[in-house]
Image (cartoon, rainbow, N blue to C red; front, side, top):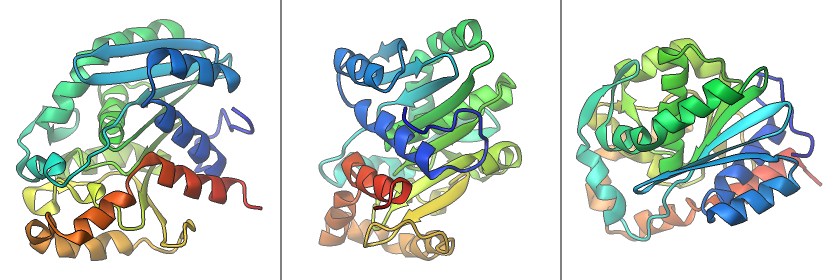
Length: 263
């Protein structure tokens, strides 16, 4: 991966771009993924798939990247079931039951690979949409259950994955190395809503309506969340549909590339 900063633990726009690219390629099939990441210089490759959960680990002699595939919703009903999503006990607190079940389908294989093959390499975790939620829970299991060092967690358009206790426990350990991207009006990060007890983790990163990464927009998340009291009335409206237009990984890649490699 060109210019990738393998050993940093600080925020990197270049690393964000390449981890975004990994999150994008995760939607392809196994052979396409392996062929493309080999062009990035990542020749170690392991693919994990069980039921609807897919992930891969790719690496070279310096780094490993764990990437989870997400989902691309085509209508509001695809996400509406998450509004009253059930909690279950997870690493560091109560987490989204469906997300944890999906992660557990592949977790033992992922952990065995990391334990046996990581050695001294840096480790990065990433994903888009549902993949971002799975990446967050995987990072929590690695950090809070296995005490495994991680260089960074970068997610894109992810839904919330756990309750406030989970978020507080996670952030006390890893918030400075967790970067959660939201593209403009993307609605998926708004679910499940805070009113249901869910909270986001990590450091918030935001792309404005011109595709610029705005480092001064920390208050945006709070302002948008106040609108969640009327979210059900939005579900079948043009606002929701517009929000979904900002959700695809291609839209994030355009912004990430602009930030990492400005003309």
